[in-house]
Image (cartoon, rainbow, N blue to C red; front, side):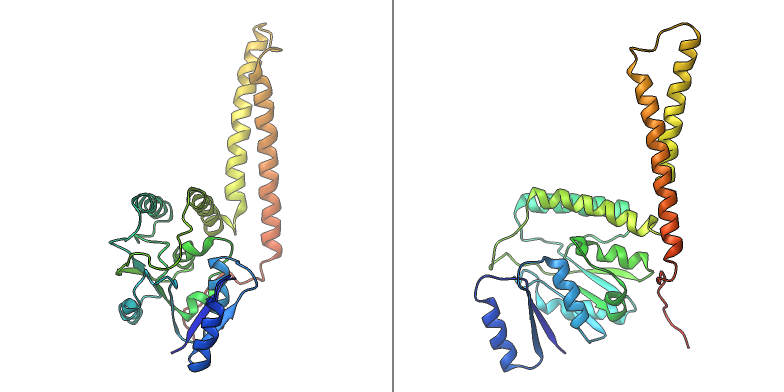
Length: 273
């Protein structure tokens, strides 16, 4: 086995400790960033560096228990491609527990993936999964969604969770709301990235039809001799029609871009001879 340690721009003595560990055991390797780039960047570079057929990820604060690794690997041996840990009994502050439950519930409903802890750092992957899933920004928590979209088999297993002993949590309301914005991004990427007209065309048609109905109603009033100069509905109807046409144009532009980039692989091969 190998252990890859990612130093995400730490300002303490972490890098010194990593170098000492790697010096005494050649199974350990380290990568150090010049500054803090975030978890997605750390996972991305770790995935590229890893050479094994099974890859385990976990946070360095040891809230997740390394003794759970065999249970995750057992799920891969059963035929699954990704196994996510489930912190069934979280050792976190109450507000973090509640917000996490709500976040995971919404993600389950929207994505259709029946796992309980999308953001658990303790996960097991087959090499093929990390080679085909792109991780960037703050989308690391949605790796199971991307993997499921590409046809991989996803499961979960309960894991022990310990109270935090090292470092400080970076949880906050801003991260909570950013998570839902990222969820919208993920849904768009997984469902509409290859068919943008389905998304923008629907919104454009909805806006155009709404504006057309409003202007039609106002036209009837105008025929009846009712003045329209002081009616905000007139400007709303015109605005909706303009927005509808623009959204439709964006959808067409997206279709042209997709058509011109068809050489980019959009499928994952499971097996061949």
